[in-house]
Image (cartoon, rainbow, N blue to C red; front, side):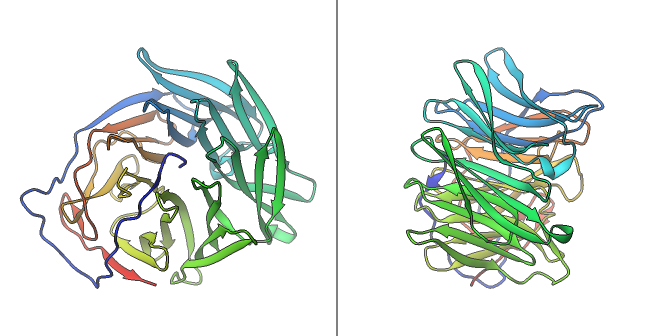
Length: 383
């Protein structure tokens, strides 16, 4: 996340529109894949991808074991992917083990994650891993839905939802800042699930989250939190899945989310309003990255194959959709480097963790989705 603080593209509000791609449109990328890690029979989950200053990818993820889980860090070297265990937990299963991999200015990795202890932060120093408990679970409360980012001065920010009360009905975003080696915790009082956090170039925090049936953003100001509603059109009895966010070079948020049952959406803030594009596709397990010109590349679980990733990007004025290989789609993550190369990861249930790479995303603009099997529709509007 911290790699992409880039200029927001000009958004044009359109009704439903379909455009035919020109002869210069590129409807596919040359994807390469590599297996990062496999331990047959055990589930891999909560994978997060980051790039070093030289573009070298590394990944943090969780591996289920007979006692709970291992937290594993992997880095791509000239001889292949090298892995090491940086933590172990008695907590097992699914999204409760949220995890974000961060990279400092001097390319040192750190990870924010939920464990059986609570919200934790691991970092590597002098070749050794160290772990700090930031917010512990207690007898009457727990923390979940963690997310993390790192500021311009290498100060990590972790957020999580604290659950308490009958059936966890009391929920509040906790914001943890590590300054000078010590943690400062703020209880915001904001009701939330499905958190994502980004820190802009000035060190200010933006949090995207689901508040019951609405998608909202909390932007840090000098006096508190400016809360904006991004999307409030979901069915009252619906729910949200797999919200992701990146900041552009103006510090404006770009968000992808799946609102059940009404579909998959991409929302971009232009400084005043939210431009919302309705995308075709499943939208489950989605992730977003921004290229150096602030244009999105989006990954989602393929509608036709639970083990395949769909990638969406814009080319010559059209949204393009491509499914490279059925090599893994769950717990995906996307980052675009400064040379417009796309790096992504995904896994399958009880299968390997896969690294995807494609060189040089073509010149894009906005607003129409072009599927490989035909022309789909993307509707953009402003709220």
